[in-house]
Length: 391
Length: 129
Image (cartoon, chains in turn green, yellow):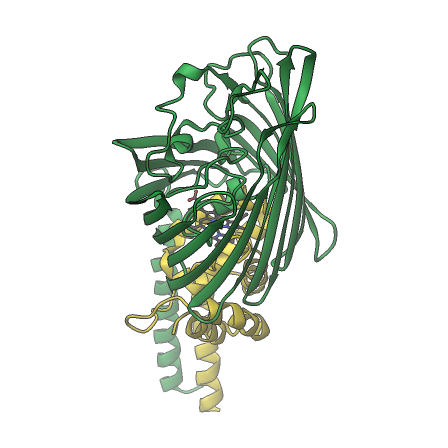
């Protein structure tokens, strides 16, 4: 090797060594706690225009923002929270969507404590953020989804305080079992006095939205002299009974093309621990390139005291949604159906059928403009435009 | 001989700075696969360019808790995202999910993570239009 080579070798070695040294301090910086440095700000916001023509034409603009704050404590703990600020009637509403500590130290198990989105189906937990949901409102099953919802849903987006454990069980290279189980405060009986103003001025579902109540009794509170108690989810922070909600979900995941989830929960909702509330959910998703099909069905059994004793009110609903991307455009069709709710063969809530036709324009992967027309076969059609932003 | 020596020297430099970068190429390749398998399940793929290395570690933990991923999968995805966020896209570039989807395949085909820049180039150009 000649002199030239030795020189260039030395130069290059020097460069290499300094690269290594330059890289080291970032790895070696420990022992300084800086909450801001370990914090990530994320979240989403949206503006929604909604119009209905119910004898008179009613339209309104609304906006909401949901900041997400993540704070990592070492590699094993994560604190995550989402606040939600919205406009409803004459007030600004705030809510704590979730606030949880995740323990991530195990290979296949995640332990979560705090207030979290319940893994009952997938819409509540995964799809309701406005930059993710392909429609400007929630499917007919759910009563809370930023910017509007059809009245008379089965339940709000479910979030509750308690403990959640997840287990990832691989079947083979392709399939994974995604298991979750939780214990939480559970639902409560809502007395008729603490119901907000009880009506929905703009027809956008906001009154139910912020109180977190199921719409199980919105249409009729008393049919054939049967009182149907209203249930509040995720609002029982001084629980009304010692009974907790127990729930779980089994998911069969073949990412990213196929997923199927079966979930269920049980709770008592009255102060005396008599009245059962049972929920079941089947959810499915199919993805092929730019195509996405999904659906979710819920069975809700609410026990009610009648003159003849205890009876179950059964409510069933489902929705199906298909979407396809054509470059930045995405047409979406969603069919939602709540079947008649009955108790002792008596119809206590009439059925509801909604067909929503939408077209989305994706300015960016997290910035859709969604235009939707929703046909209500037994009520008033709705037109919505929503601009959402995930950050 | 001179050529060969220079080549050797360049390779030495690259491998040493590669070590300094602290990423295992095999792990990055696995991370690309795990990313393609999981990160488009619930929402459009988020561009790796969106966040710096530290943010990705935190966000991946967030997604792990949400999607029930394993610790190893999550670590590999983080390695992949941290590698992918290193190249600036052209000015005014925007994430394009369609091409992201179709080019995830290209990224995976590139497969061999030793060709770091190749993967990076093909992936980044596929993320942005």
